[in-house]
Length: 264
Image 1 (cartoon, rainbow, N blue to C red):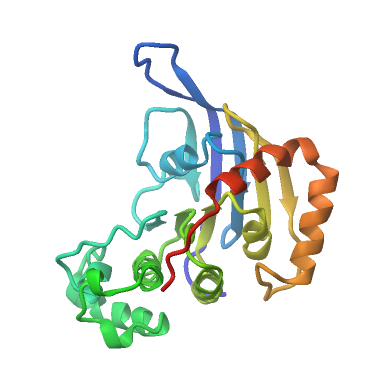
Image 2: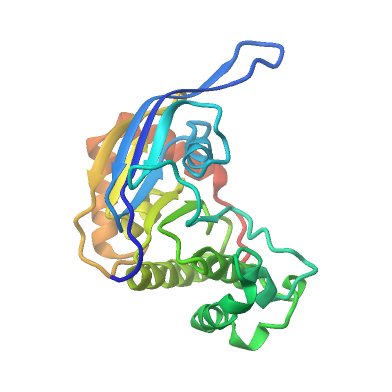
C-alpha cells in the first residue's frame, strides 16, 4: 500500500440538532473512535443512529458539535475525499470534468484523472455527460473523483446502496484495489453488515440514537474477500447469534432499505 495514510481520532461528547418546535434531538453521545493510518473501518448501525451525522462531523461539514476530530493531530482540512449515496455529478460537465471539479489545479490533474477513469473502465466515456451513463457507471465516476485528490482520509456514506448485486460487487472490488494501491484511511458507513465484513479491517457497531460505539470488531478474514464469500457468511451468522440485541436493529434497517437496483 502506498500513498498518504493519516491517523484519525474522533471524540464526540454530544452532537445535538437544534430545537424545531419540540425537544432538541441528541444524535451522537460519548462516541470515541480511533482509526490507524491506512485502515479501512466500516460503521454500521440501525436507521437513525447518526451514521451520516458522524461522517458530516468528521468531514467538517457540520462543526456544531461538542467534541473534536483530529487527523494526524490536526483538524481535518484539505485532503479529505467524500463519496455519498448519490453520485452528485454535475449534469452539464463531462465525465472527465466532473472528476477535475475537485482538483486544486485542474490542468495539472488531468493526466491523473484520466488514468483513474481508465482504471474504472471509463476511458471510452471521458467526454460523455452523466445523463448518458448507467447508475453503476455514475458511481464509478464518483469513486474516481473521490480518489483524484489522493485523499489522506476518505469518507463514504453507503456509496453502493440501491445498486444490483453484480454492479455493487464490482464497485467494491474496484474500491479495495484503489485503496490498497493509494493508501487512504477509510471511514465507510453502511447498513449492510455483509458489505462491512467484506470490506473492513474493523467493523464498528453504533447503538440506536444517540449513537455511540457499542462493539469494535476486528474482521481478521484474509483478503481478497467478497460480499458472498463463505467465510463472510459464516462470520455474519456467528455475529447474529452472538450479538442479537446489537444486531436486531441493523437487520431491520437492511430489510427496510433493500429493494430495486440501479446497475444497468
